[in-house]
Image (tube, rainbow, N blue to C red; front, side):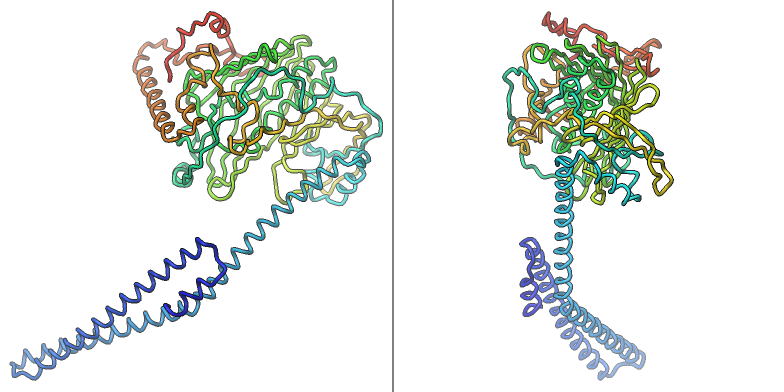
Length: 599
């Protein structure tokens, strides 16, 4: 082992960590072999001495009974020596076998590592090439003919369930053929840059520190549990609260500004659908967990002077965690939602299921839209690089006109020929007649194409009837803003996310900007942030215990939020928290005496 395996193994083309591991293992083996040899020598030496002593005893004149006992002991000593020698020989045989095969096994292991790395690189390269080719094809001038799409669907019946437009009904599939006519923009198409008057806000935050932590050591006992009940260090967080993440839905608020000016409710529906998709664009690299808000925590975003809207969130329940959100815009719309986050750790991935409806009301037309969010999934929780996907269906209903939009978020797959993170949709009137086809990706852009003619096509392999839609050229509805410079070191925050935790004067005492553990994390002081997080959570538990102890009155209704109250929704029939007013008036008076001391 010293003269052969030690050097030949180190000669293999392994990494530095592999070489260190092999060197350490071989040193241990050498040490153990030395110990074994020493034991062998001692056994041989003492065994021989024992036998000599017993032989001498046999030669003495002792009573007959004593001689028989000495003879029996001598035989047992001989058997012990034979057994010990057999053990030593077996150990030598084992070490010889290990020496013979160690180099071959190490070479095979290295080969498997190289093959795995090569396979991963090849799959990643193929996925990138496929993505680039698909997008290049979609953006090419010949895209107008769509003949390739038709031939592709005919040649691939096995993928019919995930082909171009299948969001309206699982039993119906669509083929689109684009006409050469021009189409006027939908309510003045939204560009990526937009026309925005911005105040001076910060454009960067301190870089994320490089702290390492073993996720499995924390998560292995949490499989199947509700994520909000698992105590997590800030190492897995980003320096924003869930209330601030909810406010990020407003990043593309100008879509709603333009929708409010639409005279056609169907065109308005297209923009509302694009807005519902745009809220996921910030999640593509955002695999970190936002802070769970404390009960009674609030967050305001006052952009009345810049963009005409004011937004307020409040944590209205702790178990289950629920947040109420209300936005009113001077540009003709009001949005409200109450979101309860249900999340389960499944071992390999984490499912995040937002529960609750989103309501959007346009003031001039009276159109009232309702929809719900899709499921988010964080993959490679234990091994590999974290990545996030959105999947499921969104049904947007205009409860005023009964028009609908069916959006389908197609799950990502290496083996699918679809564009990654693809979203398709169909906008239909109250009679179910399709008028617009929507297509795009939730991390980049959405387009709409007006349907000018439809006809029944051939059946697929499972007998499903295809509908062929002839459409006008697609028009851009929404395109994602580019990320700020150095975003990869700032938690992949968008320009809006960078300013959400920026200190502002006049906010409520319960505002997320004033939360100390979150502020310490943003400043890179993670150890202090963890200590502060534990203090805040224990303080919240103590307040809850005291509240429960004081709840002796039979008429006690439990915790009551400060700015929202429960009302039964006339459209969904659900009981929701809705804004009851008073917050912005208190801000004008600079009076926050009613706010609890939660920090």
